[in-house]
Amino acid sequence: MRILAYGLTMALTVTGFSGSAQAETKDIVDTAVSANSFGTLVTAVKAAGLVETLKGDGPFTVFAPTDEAFAKLPKGTVETLLKPENKELLTSILTYHVVAGEVKAADVVKLTGAATVNGQHVDVSTADGVMIDGANVVMTDILCSNGVIHVIDAVILPEDKSIVGVAQEAEVFKTLIAAASAAGLAGVLDQEGPFTVFAPTDEAFAKLPEGTVENLLKPENKNQLAAILKYHVVAGKVYAADALKAKHAKTLEGNAVTISINEGAAQVNNANLIKTDIDASNGVIHVIDSVLLPPTKQKSHSKSVSQKSCQSATHVTTSTPQWHSRQANTRSRRLMRRSY
Image 1 (cartoon, helix red, strand yellow):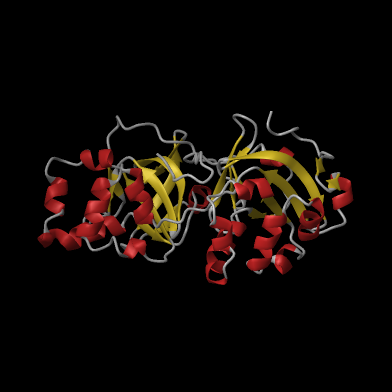
Image 2 (image 1 turned 45 degrees about the vertical axis):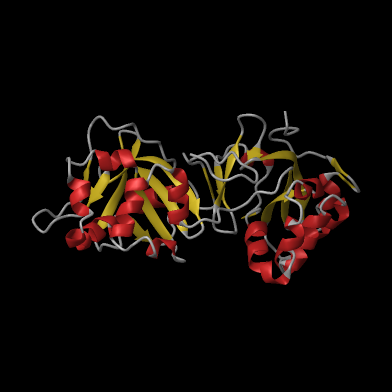
C-alpha cells in the first residue's frame, strides 16, 4: 500500500531525519529543514512569509510535498511562484496544504475531506492507499512540537476559478449560466464574494413546464428571473455539514431556504442535493436536481420545482467544521483541471 501503515505512529526515515520521536522537540519548520527533503517547500514558506506562522503554537497538520513533488510541476512554475509579485498566489497554494489542528494518520483515514487554512477543502481518499486530492501520502505522523507532518508526492492546488468558471467547466449548468447572464448576475458571481450557490443542473431546468425557461429569458421578465436565481444564492461560504446544522439560510432574494435530511437524503426545500462542497475561488457550489422557486405572497412556505422520480440525493454527514466526512465530488487530480 502507498501509505506504510494505518492507525500507527511510525518511525520512518527521510533523508537526514530519522524517527518521529526525534522531531517532536522541533517545530514544523525546523523539522522540515532537518529532513533535507523539503528544501523547495521551506524556500516557498519563507517567500510567502509563513515561517513565523508555522513556527507558532498551532497545532497544524501539514501535507508536505517533497522536493521531488515540486519538481513535477511544469518547468519554471516554482521560479515564477517565488517572485514577490506572486506572493499572494504562493500563499494560497501553501495554505491549501495546511489544516488547523493536529490530525494523525489514524484519524485522517476516517475522513473524506478536510477544511484547509486556505479556506477550501481537500478530498481524502482511501480507496487505493491514502490520497489527498490527487497526491499519494507516502509517509505519515512526523510529529513536531506544534503539529504533525504527512508527506505527499505531489503539489496540490486550490481551485482558482470563480463560481461561474467552475460551472462553465462542468458543462452541466449551461441553462443556469445563460439565465445568470440574462439576469445580469453572471458578473456578480465572478466577484470576490464569497457566495454559496445551490446550482440546478440542465436536467433540473428541463423539469420545468415546457416554455418556462424561454419565457424567463425574455428581457421583459428579467426581474422575475433575477429573483429566482438570487433565491439559489447565499452570502458567505457554507459547506454542506454547516448548512445542515444551520437548517435555514437567507438567500440574496430575501427569503430563506430550508436544508434538511428527508428519508436519509439531503435536501434544499424539496430539491435533492446530488453533489456538495464543490470549491470555487469565491465560494462553494452545491448541485441540486430541481429549480427552487421563492415563495409567493399567497404562499409563505418555500417550494421547489421537483418530481418524485428525481435521483436519490447524496447523504451528507455532519460533524465538526474543521474535519468532517462529506459526500462530495472527488477531485482526482494533482495538477489537473477539475472534471465532472
